[in-house]
Picture 1 (cartoon, rainbow, N blue to C red):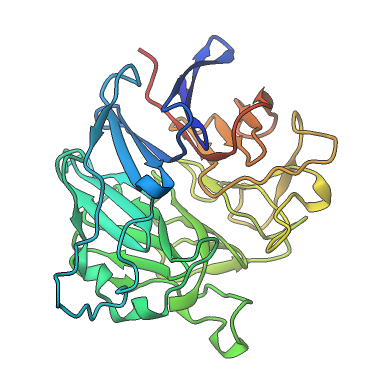
Picture 2: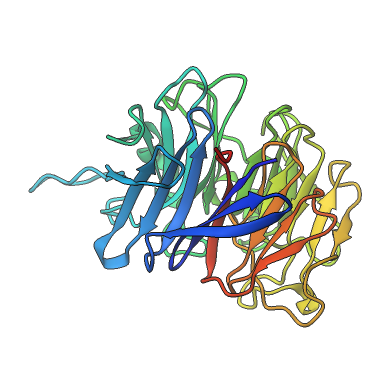
Length: 370
């Protein structure tokens, strides 16, 4: 089981380590600065931290020693429009990167490769561990981008990047609001893969329109990569054929709405969700926080509450704020109200790590403690 937990919060990157059966906070990095995402690259145990500094823009830092020291590295940037040149792209109004919303490591055969998804909905690639970045123009210039729009943010964004463990050239992306996209050639060409996703916020005739779907998060099973799960604005969806099609999971109590989803690294039929009330409310159903687990690809669910608050709760778990470690044994989640819980038994019971954190945007396990 992992020995390190990273919490990306509004006031810094908080590092926990496991000491025996207990987890203890050991450091806060970038104190006072909002951290939007943290990536642990298991290939070399590098940690990448993305900061969202508002007026000063996004920043990116890298640690090669488990957080003991950090180096500021290059940040993805959109190309500047030349003076007098008419920008005919679908995103002419989106002149700069507002936030790094997701990152993913490349395959074992791609040392140094890192992917980054941003708001606005752009994908970037680095082949030198973040020292430089290239915009993936093939996706940025697609005509369908004209129909993308923002979900929780004003602009569309790429929040999910799944690198196929069988073939590093195969990428699957999820976009709010822009559906699911597949590339089998390292990002040179792209194909929509949102067949079966359904939205209830568009006119009925566009309910199954692939280009305007709002997946909140997409995850892929490591050992069975044809199994993918989506927590969608409209519900829960699962694919067992590599996103060629999606099946809607219905009649999930107390709600099919949520932001977060985690899939077991060895079993694609097992996944965890945190249900809530959608749209303007965004809080637990009946103010009772719970974690839903399915072990049979959505045919049935078990609600886990042990160790979670019994009093009325206002906790919202953001899309990146539920994570499972590489062993498949430990889960962690943290909320917008500054609470953090950890489960050492696959979600059946939870222990509270803190009630006094800043709002948490993302959680991440690893690297292993030295």
